[in-house]
Amino acid sequence: MRQGAKPAKSKVEAKSPIVRKSRKGEGSRVQDLEKRLAEALDQQTATSEILRVISSSPTDVQPVFDAIVLNASRLCGGEYAIVIRYDGEMMHLAAQHNPRPGAAEPVARLFPRAPARGSSPGRAILNRSLVHIPDVLEDPEYDPDVVRAAGLRGVLSMPMLSDGKVIGAISVSRDTPGPFAHSQIELLKTFADQAVIAIENARLFKETKDALEQQTATAEILRVISSSPTGVQPTFEAIARAATSLCEADLSGLYPFDENLIHFGAQHGRTPDEVDAARQAFPQPPSRLSVTARAILAAAVVQVADVSEDSEIADTLRIYRTVLSVPMLRDDRPVGAITVARRVVRPFTDQQIALLQAFADQAVRVHRTTSRRF
Image (tube, rainbow, N blue to C red; front, side, top):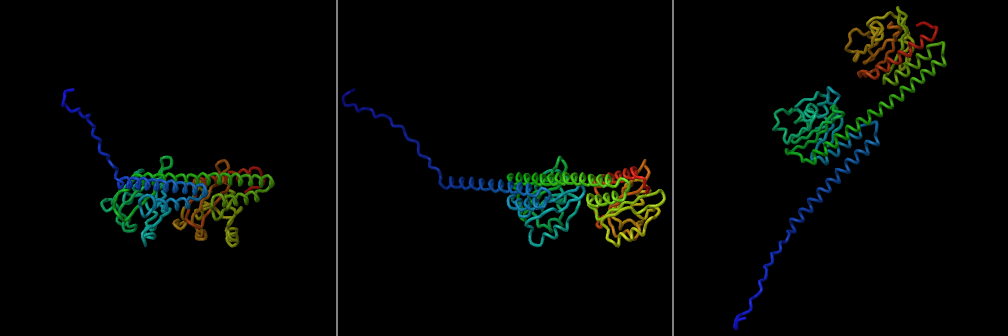
């Protein structure tokens, strides 16, 4: 080292400045996370509650629909929620929650109605897909009557699909414009799936119940046949009772036919005065004055959905509204008929028609095993 030279100072690396996180930004992120967790918990709780209602009400879908609209209104970003059922032709109001004051009845009066693009549920049913309209006032196809009735601006509708078939729709709406969040759309889809589960559960329970009741009725008829081997009257009465119950009819009648005249055989569900009037009206030749006679003349199933719209029906029979008659055929020849009727307009289903045909076959088999003629 040279004399007088100062020792070299070692270089000191400069320290990077410490970046301090903003407590305000961190707090905001925490609040956002807590909000999302709370929303997720609310959604999970709601879906679990609906599943509980489904399990506790396997034969009645109304409590499920009521729970769905309640939770959809609360969690899907809307104020008003509605469930629509679709029968293949018409939309029917199933449930609604939180309509604006005075809107519940005007909305209910809009149904039943055919699906159309003028409403979000109708459009969802026709499109078989999600309908998301941030502002209906900007949609030229939207029906102004629907807007006025429900007070809509932003709407969201999800179709209810069962095996690819549209059976309804769920909608949420609010009276302010704006889009719905992705999470709200996904939750509404979950609610639509749960509504389908409830409908299918109810259908399966009803089918199982109906099958059991049919087996029970058939067993009862067979028991009556075995206990009355030489007489048809007890069997006819058992068939009439079963037909009224299983076809959800108000009354039924079994009418033998001897190739010339129709006779009064058995009945169930009539008042005493109606029974007396029926007995006095028989025997009678077949004509178009009654649905029973038409089934015998045509040797085919005849159903009149609304008697009041059929000018040929006798005035004395107009106390009934929907009437179904199935002929009793032996070797394709009519030997009688079984008739069921309702006092309100409600056509009988294909399943009920098939059931009544099975009862008619039983009545014919009874005749074949007895010596008594109709």
